[in-house]
Length: 202
Image (cartoon, rainbow, N blue to C red):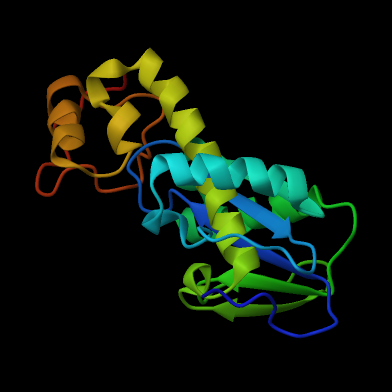
């Protein structure tokens, strides 16, 4: 069962991102402040939930959260500043949307940059430990999946409607056959051995 808070008596915002390891698309982060007494029998790390469960949780979080925000950093900026900085920037952008600043920021993982001098705590695998981080993981994942579905309509050959831009075999086969799109991260190793097979972008 997930833990409701890290420190009692503090307003806590959970932060998490989705899409860090993808070959294409943005990195999306969310920040969520849940009310005291928030309850859910299915809330967990978004990777452990079905699509239906994630969508159900998204609706509940949107309706019941005290605050939530979404931050998006596109593939071009990821290439400019690197994926770690882009992930942290996306979290900061999500926090920018929260009107009531938290006392404490709980971050999934082990890397973060201070936000407005607010105390923060990095927690490895925090999305499977704390409710607010799990809620953020759900919001980030569902928003990113929504975006990748839109991009899939534009570039159906890459199967983003199912692989969401991750390095699946079908995705890499499409890259080898059709080249890179404007949504691909050019700074990422797109294929295991052949990095020089692309003459341009789609």
